[in-house]
Length: 282
Length: 282
Image 1 (tube, one colour):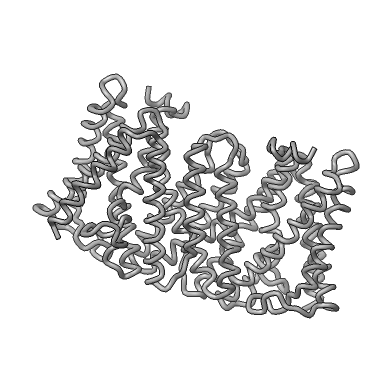
Image 2 (tube, helix red, strand yellow; image 1 turned 45 degrees about the vertical axis):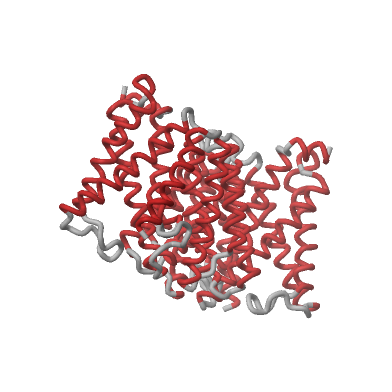
């Protein structure tokens, strides 16, 4: 099993990095669309095991529409298009479940459909938003490195020093010591990778890098716990069988998913600080 | 009971109409905020009867933040503020439920919290958006008249001619004949009230009035069915006891809630048609 894992990692990690780093933004969109469709199907399957039945049609269609809209208009659109789309998606959800389910589990299935669209498509869409920023390909690489370094550091520190469990009922292995190690690892990975990939003139500086690194790492840890909570609630071990030996796609990307919006909004804040913040900082 | 109903109607209908028609937009906001808080509490109580536990703190706080933001920025904001707020609300929801519930019913409660915020706050927020349009007070009166007229017409026609049930499992009394009567009633109420309240120079014309009237009426009927599905799923007769003899607030406003976004977006389309539509129409 370990060998399969290794071989598969050697195959897919470089492919993803190549698409992100050397492809155009639209290639990242295509990659994220693929990930979102797989993620939505995994989420739906987990729900079905829990006895809840979101609509696969609605979740997949809505996620694709949402991602393409966000790719085309960004979040600063003056047309408010995404809001119309979100409104339309919500209407579609309740009307669809009304026709499909009538009163039977109407609340549970509609809620799960909305949750799935937000959890998978909205979280993942920030990878596309980051890619659309200036030097977005490098920024995505920085994000992946922060998460990867904090994972490795948390695992290593937790393994050797871990004593105090954070939340055994959600994720039995995570310790506070490991989390602290992950936090420090993520912070210094942030400083290092920002400096290395953006260069001395364009990197956001030491303080911003540390701030981004620490908040993104904490977000990633929350992502891990949220995915664990979903899996425990659904009583499955893996979210799916996307990659042999790696569990499901949602397992693989649980930290990235939640870290991505935090990274994106912090980058926006750094690039366009509101006046009160700019006054405080500079 | 009928007398209580009548007396209460005589009291509260004029108050609501007065606030909307003669008050400033901020008075409508205050009214809608009150309705949303009551509606959210009713929704939460129904969920609890169904065995699902959304977070009352999160749903109420998020709904108030969402409404005030929508009041302040509208949907055409170039700052994307509502999107940040929606993202923040979603993050808050999953993190809150992670801390509160851990893996226990994580999916059901998070889904219900999101559903509640959308169902109550997002639907109702369009009343505020309509009020913020030019002549918004008159437009709101037009909307209420369309829904009221279509309700009365549907009830009357259904009572005397109703034979073919639409969906007995959701709402046992609704008939296709009644729906047709309601549709015609809503269409002509739309023409009449637009013309009467907006005047010959400012009303949207016969075709738009008929289109708005019919789509808004259909939306209102869907709202009725959706609320019925929720109540049947939760196995309650009324959504709450907001007004003696009138059931809950969500029962009272189920049609208006769903009709409001349709009315608002059709008014936007009429006032600012995209070029391809303008070319087709004029």
